[in-house]
Length: 521
Image 1 (cartoon, rainbow, N blue to C red):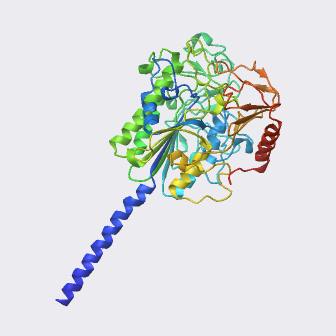
Image 2 (cartoon, rainbow, N blue to C red; image 1 turned 180 degrees about the vertical axis):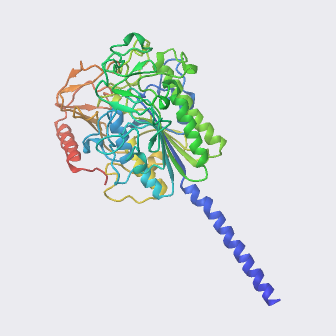
Image 3 (cartoon, rainbow, N blue to C red; image 1 turned 30 degrees about the vertical axis):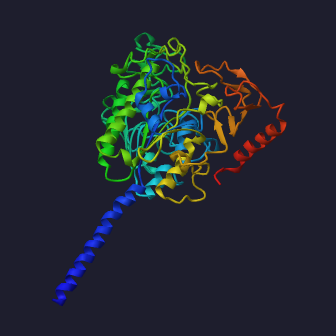
């Protein structure tokens, strides 16, 4: 009887202990939500409905639904007005101007982010996350000599913290038009090796210049080298025919591969970087989206992007993951009209204002170049709101590390601020008090916002102040100018003479941040 009592006691204790363990697992899992960052490409502040897109036939219901159920930031930024430096800063938490070679990556460019320092995905891996990037990469592949297209493409995403990648290796107006899965070009036939170069491989090689009459989309400037799928690109390539994709299928492929990966990792906390190619040129929407916006292909790919957002949310709902998944929707830079192809973006723009109330766009350090749609969404955790707090894609590294409970080494993500409370909409939470904006880096231009004040620093003495063209017939500009954004959101009136103390302080602060090598406290 005595032994039986002891046995019952031990049995009950074991059940209680196991029960405690059982209930501990979901509690820990709940503290580490899934994270999806959806980054659009060249999407402007005014390009979606929830940010005031005017055309009745430009509908973005899925993006608008995120905004209606989450936080729509009116001062949400990317850190640069072109793709490679923004993506670099997003993943490293470091301003791109701090590292040479972070401008728009060429087709054969080596890996821009070197293995070693902590990155956003490597920090989340420390917390037990599965990590993936699916979509546009444009951060280079391979060692100093560039990518070995017929061998292993490393270092790349997997060497800086991603468990899985399915990529467009550069950007689609640059060669080659192939997918990269992990370290290899997908479906590459060894008997038909892929060659990528900067010079014409043979005198009879078809290009956008020699065979312009064959193109299904004509070029306006610069995009006139190798032809694939009736479109000429930047750079040259041959071979790899079985590996080549059709432009029209890119968005479908990103959704397909993302849904497949989410399903395979639904039992773990995961981080997915969904890196869309929409709205970047060449804008070639799938046939089912053509004519859906009446704003040319540029409008049609906004509708296509919105569909992608809806499909991802639908998958989360189906797998019952929505309530434990935080979504951030953003863009890598502001908008552009003619970016190298004749796709009627300008002719059919009408009264649509892609950059919303701001001046400037892609390539510019004016507000329209880096202030973009920025939405956080997490059902049950984030309450619907509109926030004027300043947040930036560069801050997602430190903020997600805080969300996952990872301590940041002092040297890591040196310009990324922990703005988690602001991203979650907690009462009284503050965003950034300052932000440095940059262009591609090539021209050496900066914007520096601190509260209501905005300093423009144009070392090139020229500024891009238009969305509708990418031509270099820009406006002349003084090296320094000061603007009061509370009264002059379009940055039209230089008030440096009226506020000399502010002007002097802002110039010193900007240079100090540049010289310091870091800005994170």
